[in-house]
Length: 431
Ligand SMILES: C[C@H](O)[C@@H](O)[C@@H](O)[C@H](O)C(=O)O
Ligand SMILES: [Mg+2]
Image (cartoon, rainbow, N blue to C red; front, side):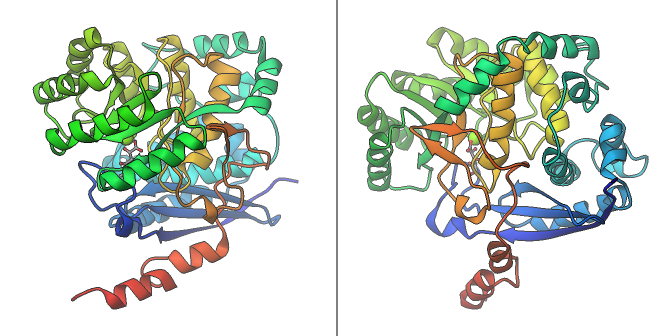
């Protein structure tokens, strides 16, 4: 029976993570991890859950944008949507009036991600998908000079070989992960040492440290973490867009003795040629450039790849236009032979992105070289099917759907500004 979507609700849900400096970096010094949380409902009583991640103030703007998009979803059947998913994607991203406030970037793209993530959740509960079906979800507009529909189909068909073995391998071993939880910028050295000791004891071998505010602090913290993890484990550094191009090169050169695998977001996320310059300058030091958590669409990723500006592609489940656009980027990255190491953490990003990276390994790249998925140990307890990490690997999710359904009680108490958590905090806040 066709399932008609009859309702879409969206809520502003925030967690006061800034109180403990969790998630802090050189540019976002006080993040309150938040989501615009979307639930769509069908007349048959089925529900789809979706979200997009933000860091506090401004979530209400994303909520408004989701409301502005809801008219495109409510009244449609799931079959109508997935029967022409490319067309539906365009309806959301290319509406003649709404596209002016994007197109395909900023708040409206975050809202698109939240809505489409909910649609994918609903669809994912239903069935498996063939290469043809997947390709039919991708909007190839603006990327055919890098990847055609036929090439995408060929890549997916080629990766059918060995798929079952890779699936079994993932079920047994899981997908390799790295942790960012030890070294947020606002953590003291003592906290860093303790968290690093715990992480090593739990089997973590890949670590990311925040840098970019003060060089001396960076040197001290990187020395500390390198000493703790030893010479053989992997270290990544993340500057969250703090530098100009020249500054990035000299700053990272000073940190080179600590042997980072990559420097993440060294400069503006929009500066493709700047990233290319930094990549070229750092290559002789064996340091790659990573970016993507604020790369707003497939067209930007295409250019980063064409310009050899990135050595690690960091897809994001909520920044790009949901699975549809992530599929395009995974396939382009594979064609350009650049490893994908997704951005995760936040609220629900690990839950969502585990699906994409498992898909990448099983159905696209068939490669684990230089690949790992970010993990941050926060806020998983608010989800009905939280990620499962075993020995620093993501174990494949077992429950149907896209894993971003939150506990009703968590949504209730963290709704901004009226939920209990915020009502209490705001009552205590100075005028
Ligand atoms: C404000 C956030 O915590 C960011 O610092 C975070 O997403 C980070 O860039 C990361 O790579 O995990
Ligand atoms: Mg980052």
